[in-house]
Image (cartoon, rainbow, N blue to C red; front, side, top):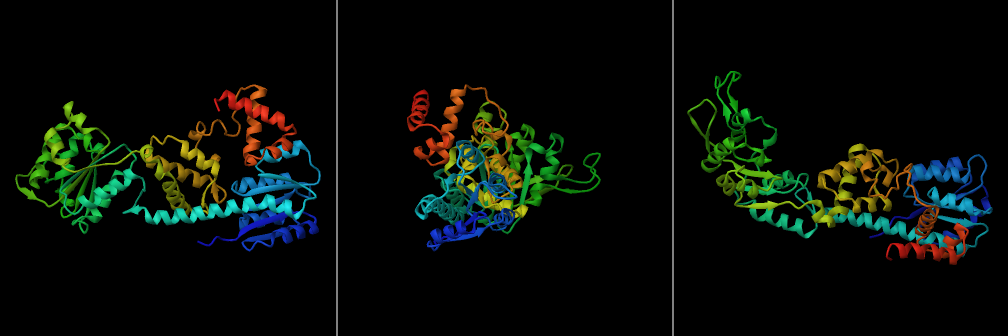
Length: 455
C-alpha cells in the first residue's frame, strides 16, 4: 500500500531559510516541500492543498506567525504546525503550544535539527494515511448486507442471519433501541426466498389501539363511521414478502390474539367482512423489551411469544461491541461527508479519544447522530473534539473552551506541565525548556501528580 506524499508548507519572509528547509527535507522522496514568503498567500495554499505539516515564522510583516497559527488550527486542527523564531521566550513558546502548535523551533537551526523535528511528524502523517486506507478496506470486508461489524457478537449475528433467512417463517429480533434491528430485518429479507416480494414496515407503537386491527388486516366500506371505502391492510400489502412488526411488545393483548391467528393460519378477515383472505407472508418482529418478562407479568401472550420466537436474533448494544466503534465512525464520516458535500476525511486523535470513551447509551443511532452533527460543524478535513455536541463535555474532562474549574494554582501548574509534555510526545527536556523550569522541578510536578493518582 503506497502512501501519498506528505506535504509541508514553510512560511518565512527569509528566502534563504526557505531554501535551507527545501534542501534539508527535499531528500525524502515522499515529502513535498512548498516554500512561501507571503503569509496571506501561505494561508490560501494551506486552505486549498491541506498539507499535513506547516512551519511558520513567528515574526513576519503584515501577519504574525501567531495569528497565522490560530487561523490554520481553526481551519484544520489535524495539521501539525511548527513555530519558528529567532526571538525565543518561554511565554511565546507556551502561548504557541496552548494555541495548537505541536512544536517550537529556535533559529538558527541545522539541517539535522530540522529533520529530527519534521521526520516524526511526517511518519505519523503516513501512519494516519495508511490507517485511513486500511479502515476503508476493513469497511468493505466487514460490511454484511448494509450492516457494519467485526466484533465476535456481530459476526455471530451475521452467521445467524445467513442460516435463518432461507428457511424462516417468523423471526424475533431483540435488542436495545438504536442497535439496528430494522437493518437485520432488511438483511433477512434480501437473503430470503421472499427477496423479490415487498418489505412492509409496521411500527406497532405508533398505531392507536382503536386502529390496530384496521391497519393490520384492512377494512371494508361501511365497517365503521369513517370507513368510506375498502382499505388494504398491511398483511395483504406484504403478501409474497415480509411484514416487519417493529416494537411488537407495544401491542395490546386484544390485538395480540388476532395477530397470533393470522400468523398461524396465514388467514384473516378484513374488519367488517365475513370473507376470509389468504396470504403468504413471512414475519420479522422486533422489540427492545424483555418479552419473557412481559409474558411472566401477563402483558404479552405466551402463545404469541412462542410462535414468533422460534428463531431469536439478539442485537448487542454498542457497549458490548466497542471493537466496532472505529469502523462505524469511519462509515458515518464517509456517509455524511458525501451527504453534505464536505471534505471531511476523519477525526483528530483528540476527538477519537472522546468518542472511544463515551458510553453510547443510545447505541449506533446515537453515534450516527453525533457524527452527522460533527460533520456539519467541522470546517476542515478532520472532526475535532469541539465539533462534537455539548454532551461530550464530561468525556472531554472539562476541556471545552470557556469552561471554568475552581482548582489550586499548584494543580493548574501540574495540568499545564502534563499538557505541554503530551504535546511534545513525552520529551521532558523540551517540556522543561518551554515551561522555563528545571528538569528537577518538572519531575517533581509530574511525580506528585502520579503519586496523587496512584500512578
